[in-house]
Amino acid sequence: MEHGSYQNPSASTFSVTDEDHTLANSLRLVLNKDPRVSFCGYSIPHPSEARVNVRVQTTAGEVLKDGCQNLINMCQHVRKTFDDAVDKFKSTKASETESMDDDSP
Image (cartoon, rainbow, N blue to C red; front, side, top):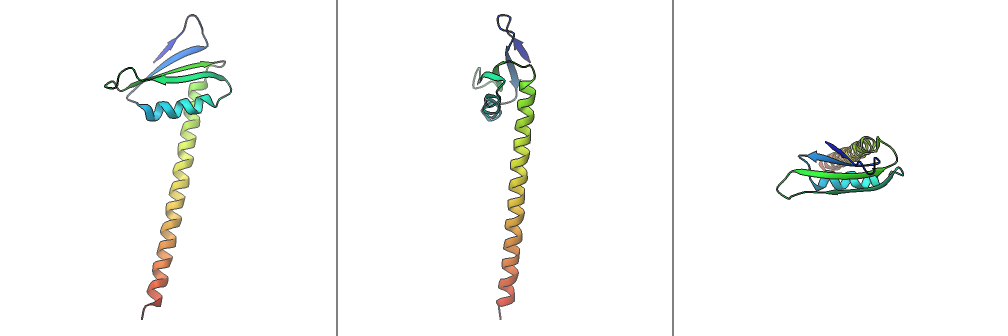
């Protein structure tokens, strides 16, 4: 849900339900790296409420959508890098085990 500002049309607050600091802080980091964003911050209204409010001041309208897409791309890259490292580790361990079996009497 978006809450715009009548005094400043370039500022909006987005209320995201069922999320916490994990998404909000990651999104804040990505959005603050965007040169179109002049300010981005978030707050959690109450600890027992699963909702975050993300405040964005920008010169463009699609920065939240772009920021979410950038965050998705980053997560996919991290996941692929991790999976590749696990596969490499497993194949190294398997070859070490085979070579140890060949050395035994």
